[in-house]
Every structure is written in C-alpha cells, then in structure tokens.
Amino acid sequence: MRESIGGTWIFMIVIVFMAILIAYISISINYSTAYRLKSAMVTKLEQYDGLNNTSLKELDKTASAFGYHQTGFCRSNEGNQYFGVLNGHISENPTTKQSYCIYRDKREATGGSEAKYYYELTVFFGFNLPVLGELYTFRVGGETGPIFYPNDNYFR
Image (cartoon, rainbow, N blue to C red; front, side):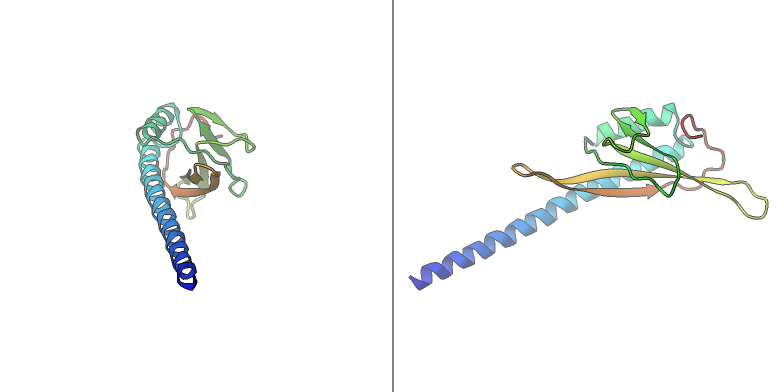
C-alpha cells in the first residue's frame, strides 16, 4: 500500500513538471512571434515616416500576415498622445481593447538642431488556456529610430 501511494506522488510531480515546461515553451514561442511582429511593424513605421494612411494599411497587412489577433489595453505614455488600432480603425479610447498601440514622442534638440520624432509601438500576446480562457496579456514594445520630418495624418 505504501509503494502505491509513493508512485502516485511521483506521477503527480512529473505531471506538474511537464505542465510547467509546456507553459514555458508556449509562452516563449508566443513571445518570439510577437517580437518578430513588433520588429516588422516598427520597420513599416520607419519606412513610411510615421503614422499615415499608407503606413496604417501596411501595419494591418503585416499583422494579418502574422495571424495576429490579440488585443489589450493601451496605457497612457507620460502624457504623450497615443492611438490604438483595432481592425484598421484608429481610436484614442483607453477603455476599449486595441490590437496594437502607437505613441509618438517629440524630443527637442539642443544646440539649434531640429527636433526628432520617435514612435513607440506596443503589441500584445496572451497566455490562454482552453478551459480557463485568457490568463494574462503580455506587452512587447519597440521604438523607431529618429524621424526628422514625420509624414503624419493622425498626431497633432
């Protein structure tokens, strides 16, 4: 009797260890996919000099190509203006979930040179279980290089 109880404990320890290992691997795979998506989207923002109609279409094409469908809440970025994008539509509503968020940061230059604009992009990936649903949403963010003359249709 004692050995059958000991075997059950070892079996349960192995099951728990496997569950933790599978969760770690799935989060790692989701993170790497979200990181590649973020890098591709930041490249599109740099390529089209900011957030305009053309870059918005390209960002949506890139998200569709990756099969991206995760949503999350945009958070305000130290008083800077931001936009959330959901299904190709832009909004500034912080109470609804968005597919990705775009922030613009204007950094004044010293010594009489021109101001630089930086765009920060945040995409989301979640940890979902079939029975429990979405447990947690992670954020992956990145920043463009400096853009001196942005071609913006949305930011003031």
